[in-house]
Image 1 (spheres, rainbow over the protein chains, first blue to last red):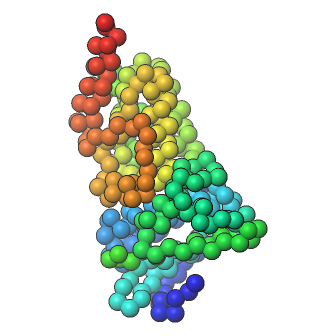
Image 2 (image 1 turned 90 degrees about the vertical axis):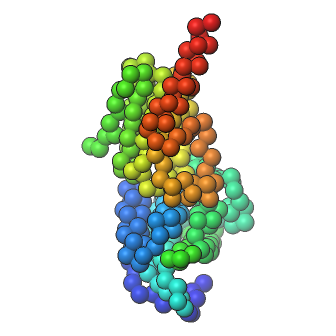
Image 3 (image 1 turned 90 degrees about the horizontal axis):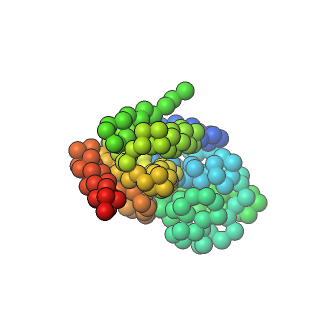
Length: 141
Length: 126
């Protein structure tokens, strides 16, 4: 759900289709996080969450697109990442958000783990149409 | 073709991961470490991840896999040099790193490996 008070100052979209794209994505996000002065700890949390979510897209939806937004809201600056795929969708989001729940070969940490690492997390999914996960990490949050 | 070097140090193998791993590279690394344990009759594997900036559940699984496979071949695995930010992130992510010993640095990791494998030697001498 777009928040009207969010101002996006720069945006970039990257396709995630193969394993190596995940590394390119995390390298790019790291670079942007450094540019806006995010601490090393917050950088690490953000790129780890990004890596989890991008791998999720590869594993469950055959890839998708990630939008990277530099943005600010009130006096906060941060990075917003939107992971959009056209995969099978998630029938029971509540279940998918539980720890140790996984339908794939992973450790079942992808979604709940990523949520713990970021400032804001939202997920929308329609079975048969795809899933969109949005995360925000504030520079000081 | 990228390849992560595996160095032999006495009874132990030293592996320094300096790039972010992707599937192919990780699978090759698993296979190469297992091959090197067998070939060198190694009793321990020291993995230095001080240059690794992301340990996500994929990387965690690779480290756990290596430790499990090594254990089947009677070798212990110690992961050393984890960056503080990576350690904090790992805990918040909820990654268990099953079967993997950790130490602060290479020196402490070698001590840990020696103590782990020496007690094994003592037991087998009985």
